[in-house]
Amino acid sequence: MRGQIILSHGSGSGPDATKVSMLAGLAESLGWRTQRPDYRDDDSRGLAGSVAPRIARLRATIEELAAPPLLVGSSMGAFVSGLVSMDVPVAGLLLLATPVAIPGYARTFDLRSGVPTLLIHGWRDATCPLAGVQAFSAQRRLPLLVLDDDHRLGSSIDMIAAQLRHMLDLMAKAG
View (cartoon, rainbow, N blue to C red):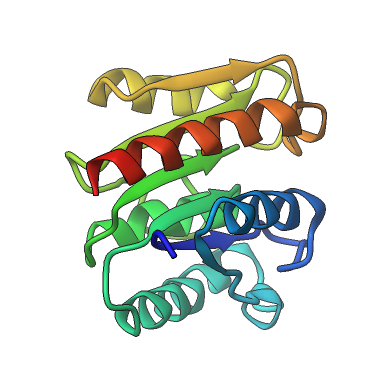
């Protein structure tokens, strides 16, 4: 096995969602171990109320591992993955449809400087408008791949899979 990947689903979704499942399957086929925490109970607390429990659940999952994992997150999963990277070591971040703020939650989005990161977002994302993540990535000089898609990025699964494969190849060569 090459390493560990933790895939975090968005609100109103689950660990068996199409995108998360497909990315986990790809990673596993390449020799990586995956985990998909189930945040559905946390999400029953509402958007702002779910952030702290999600962070605690993701941190606990990471702290059980022998080595820092790659975090892959979509929407709320991307938000908490970035915030968790501020507190515990991670090997990298692949963040999809990332909100830069959660209404009612005090902290804005951030991530640990120096962590290999790729942000992927849809031009037509009405849930998390592109301008926020575009400004965030520009301030930090992070790569941002913008696709002709909406918040779910459902039409871009193949491109997202190619980007994950590329990240995993780079991590395998480096590690």
